[in-house]
Structure formats: structure tokens, C-alpha cells
Amino acid sequence: MEEYTKLRNFWKNKKVFITGHTGFKGSWMCLMLNLFGAQIYGYSLKPEKKSLFNQSHCSKFLKKNIFSNIKNKKKLSQSINKIRPEVLFHLAAQPLVLEGYKNPIETFDTNIIGTINVLNAMRSCKSLKSAVIITTDKVYKINKNDKLYSENDELGGIDPYSASKVCGEILTSTYIQSFFKMSNLRNKISTARSGNVIGGGDYAKNRLVPDVIRAINSNKNLYVRNPNHIRPWQHVIEPTYGYLKLAQLQFQNKLQNIDSKWNFGPNKKSFVRVIDIIKEIYNLKKIKYKFDKKSKIQETETLRLNNKKAKIFLKWRPKWDLNKSLKNVIEWNDIYKKNKNARKICEKQIINYLK
Image (tube, rainbow, N blue to C red; front, side):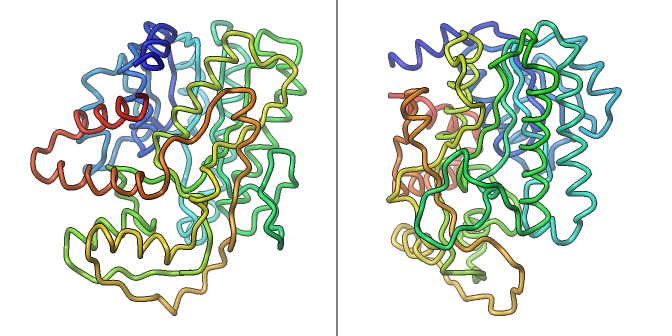
């Protein structure tokens, strides 16, 4: 429990502002920070009725819930400057590729204007000592070889969601160079890119593992699109822990003159095809599946992240392989169906991860 103790020693009573705290990743971050004793302030849309946020009763331990749109510039700025946080994590976003195709304007509006509003509010927040802007592994321009994507590779974006996140990366870099380079936040703002995260309590539509869980619970067919696409699969605890380490080291002035972009991807064995994930889950839980041959949505075929930089400078490294991650997702689902205590399950998995 040495790592848990170190984290608690740093985060205890730190004032942390999280945008998108009611989402899947945001809820896991709230649960993790609560274990470490942080004072958590959340700014987000209201959670879906069926959500990890509600199932874990996150509202009970948050210092403050602010339910508002990230596009509300005035409300966001007032909230940040009134609370005066020491650390900020920006997770609020439209997070789905398919939704980006259905509603491209809303996707660009939320992911670009929302990020501008956060960065702009940070300019007048003198208490802030560290900030992490969460983007995605889909920001990279597609390469046709087997090379892993590194932080300084060219950015791309072949679909509205990916392109909106590329814009977030560019905006953050622009604000760092234009406004924060000579401020109290010099070397203390970063963007973070993770792989395809999985974990208990994810109820998003058109995302593979939540679709698998729904198929298991309903005993219905799972429809699989793009079975040969390769993704960097990882449990949500992995990058969330990485974001916290990054924010901590920035706060402590231990990342001076190091480029502000970070990959938090799994190890190479977890870069597998969609169909391989299905087969892996099939070995744990028998499911029925069919291939969706009608899907014509263009998506990046291969995504593989190079995590060497985080390993060297943050001493962060993946702990759970794909099989272990999937087992934890299945276990979460099985236990929750019996006792409905989502918070307890998440906390147990976080503590097990840190051992």
C-alpha cells in the first residue's frame, strides 16, 4: 500500500476542479480522488439516470456539484474563480465517434468551444498550480505502418470527433505559448491521450465493451462493427492514475522544460483487434455475436500508442494486461447485479490496482 499512502499524502485536502465529472471517466476519477482525500468540485451536465456517477453516489462526497454546460463561458469562469482550485482536470466532451457523425456541429461546438472556455477561465485563476486537458488517442494522423504513435507525431483526425479533439490539442498548445509561458502555470499544463478505456459502470451506446455487457445481461446478440480494427485497450484505472501522477508532478515543479503532451497507452500485448476482444470475453462469458456488415462509418483502422515518455518521466507504467482488465469489468458487472454497491466495487478495484 506504499503507493496508496504516497498518493493520499499528496492529494489530501487538495482543491480539485473536474469538468465532465458525471461521465464514465470523470466518475472513476472522482472515486479515486475521494479515496486519496481530495476536495472535489465538479462541473458537468447532469448525469444520465443510469450512470456510474449515480450508482456510486458521488454527489455525497463531492464538495460541490455544478450542473451546467461547458459552453456556458460566464458560468464556468465564475465557478472556477470562485472555487479557486489548485488542480484542474478537463474531461467534459462529446466523447463518441458515431455521435460525431450524427451531430458534427454539436461535437465541434462542445469539444472546441468548451476547451477554449476552460483555458480562458484558467488565465484568471491565480490559485491554479496544475492542469491536465484530456484528449484522445484518435488525434494522430493515420500511418500505414506498424509504428507506434508518439507524442510529437503529426496530428490528423478523419472523423468529426477526432478532428474536434485535434483542435483541443492545438488550442491548448496555443494558449500555453501565448498566455501561460511566462505565468504561474509555466510547465504546469498538459494534454493527455489514452487508449480505448474499459471498466465497470460504462453505459455508453455504440462502444464495444458496454455493448458486450448489455448483450450478456439481456442474452441478446452483440452486433460488431469493424472486427479487424486494432485498438489500445486498457482499464480506465490505468490512464486515470496516469493523469493524477502527471498533475502531481506538474504541481511539484518536477517536469520543467518537458514537452506538454503525454500518451497513457497500454503495453503492446493489449493492442488487439476488436474480434480478439470478443473472443477473449467469450472465454469468460459465453455471448452471441454477429458482424454488422451495414456499417459504413469511417474510423481509424489501427491505433497503437507509444507510452515510453510516461514510463521514463512519470514512472507510470501499465499494470493490468487485457485479460486482467476484462476480468475486472466482468467481475464489476457480476458483483453489481448482486449487491448494487458500485462505489465499494470501484474502490476495491482501485486499491487492488495500487498494490
